[in-house]
Structure formats: structure tokens, C-alpha cells
Length: 416
Image 1 (tube, rainbow, N blue to C red):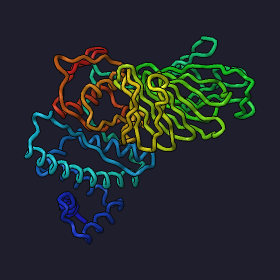
Image 2 (image 1 turned 120 degrees about the vertical axis):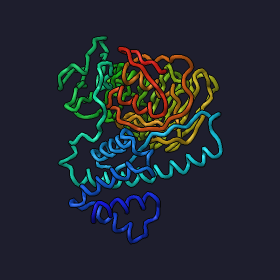
Image 3 (image 1 turned 30 degrees about the vertical axis):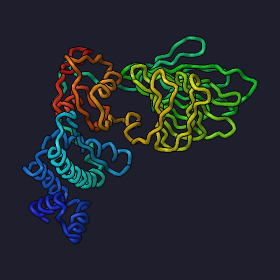
Image 4 (image 1 turned 135 degrees about the horizontal axis):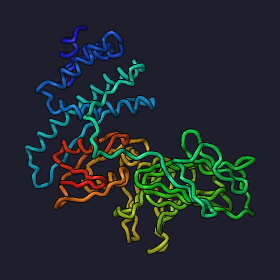
């Protein structure tokens, strides 16, 4: 099949005008190595055409390819994403909404087709994955590097270990528990003779803290795993004893809890207690956020207030989020998109109709910058996805597509 044939099929696919036989023909040829170059040219032609000018911006296709690469590395089905902006309410009209709806249907269709084609290309040609697909402008001198794995471990005796500087191996011995830094950078607590808990033992607590611009993973003595986001902390015992496995969290953490019905797992965040058995959930409770949010991915958790209304307690189902406003005793429950909630843990920024202030608070924590606004904070809501391994300047360029402007001076970021 010639390049022109591919371009014709691709364009008619985007216009939803392919016959069933033509669609089968297109899909059948996607994985054939001899068609790789023709496919790439067909994509380029489609993106450059006037009919799809909204996809011709290189940085938008960069986002699509970047996410495909990330998904391919995890051996998951490829996905695609584009940036979009919802204008302030006062600027929306009926014809504007209809035009946007038609526009985004075209973009969604195009993104899906590109994901299929590019996904085949990367999965069928792994030896070429090292090609620099994201061709952005080189970093400038005022750019800020992304965060990385770094944390400080404070032991029960008040001594501290800087984990990002320490060698792999045993960091400390606390009773029968060894504190190890693994070769993959994780912190692990290993109990000699297996994970045996002794009710007569008194718990000894450590605290692991991540700074702004840091993240870390911890394997607890029972095998449970915890991912700490930037500017967060986890207080945990070197061995779980007694009737429950209790830890305390500040900031944001993702939990993957090892089942043990005889010893329930509990997380305390401020005046809130989260009770779990075997489950995966995310907790977000930064001091500069308006709410404490507990999001359940699977299993079951019970969220309870320790102050305010006596007995205020709600059980969550997978896909639900419990929210508690600061200073409030009421618990609200809503369905949420869990993928965007835990995107940080998977190495992504993923926003869905988020305002500028919400986005900038994440920029502050991950890039260790201080954000200020030149006047009133811009209105509008933004939806976009990009890897957290990108420098601050590259991430801001994506936001500039929505009309925002920024200035970086050292560790100060101004929204213009």
C-alpha cells in the first residue's frame, strides 16, 4: 500500500467514512514492518493538513507519543492524551460549545488513530524506542529540573539518614528488624525469621519524609507498600504489634496493603482515621489544600472522623472518594476518575478540568518552586497529561498553549 493510500485511509478514518472492509485492511497492515515508514509519513501528512490544524502543533503530538512510550514501557495498551482548555463561563456560548464539541470529537478520533498506529510502531520495533520522539526546545539556564527519589529517614533514636545519598544495603538494625535500601532505591523493613509479630514487644517508630521535589517508596514490615509524593511523611513501626497495623501520614501517599484480617491496617491523617483490610487507596492531605481526600481503587476502607460529630464514619466502594473540608466534621463521598488521582504515582501529571491554582500547587511541590501571580489568578480549567520526568520549562510550554504565560527566576515562578 502506497503512502498516498495510507493518507487517504487515515483521513477517511478520521472522518468516520471507512467501510468495514477498508477498516479491516488498515488495521491488518498496521503491524507490518514494511509499512512503518509509510505509516509515519501518513501521520505527518494528516497532522499537517488544514482539516486537522488543531493537531498540527508539535507539542500536542509530543504529549501523545510520550504517553504511548510510557505505557509501552509498562507493557500496557497504548493510550493518548491531548491538552484542552475550558474557557471562563462568561466566554461560553451555544455555537462555541457546539463548535468545540465537533472539534474535540475530531481530535479524540485523531488521537485514537495515532495511538493505534504509533503504539504498533513502538511495540513492534522495540530496538528503536530510544529515538527521541519528544523534540522540544533545549532547556534554558532558568529551567528547573523535575523531582526525583529523595527522602530523609529519621530513626527512633533521633538519628537521620539521607536516603538519596546512602549506599544500598543495611542502613540500620532495630531489634529484630533490618532497615534496608534496596537496589531499586526503595526502603524496606525486613524482620529476621520472617514476618512474625510478638504482642509483648513495644513498637519502635521511624519517620520517612520527602522534601519538595522528592518522592520515595517504602516496603513496610508486613509487606505493604507505600508510595510517598513530594512534601510528605510516613510514621511507621519497625514491626507491627498488637491488634492493628497503624501508621500516620502527612501530605500524599498511595497504599497497597498486604491482607491480614487478624490485624487490620489503619492510617491516621490529621483528625481522620482510615481503616482497611487488603486494598489499594490514595490519601491526599496537604496543608495548602482545602480538603483531605481519600480515594479507593479496590477493596474496602472506612473513613472516620476522630473529632466533631461522634461516630461520623463512611465506608467507600472502589472508584469513590471521601472528601473532608479543613475544619469540617462532615464527610462527602463522590465517584471520581481514579486514574488521574494516582497519576503522580505512575510518573504522570494528569489533570481533568483543573483550575490554575490547583495545577500550580503541584508544580510547587514537584519542582520545589514558589508560585506567585502577577495580578489575579487566570480563570479557565485545563485538562492535560505529561510525564513528571519533564523539566518545568517543558511542562509550562504545554500550559502556554491554553493562553497562559510564565516567568521563571531562580526558584520563583510567576504566572503572568
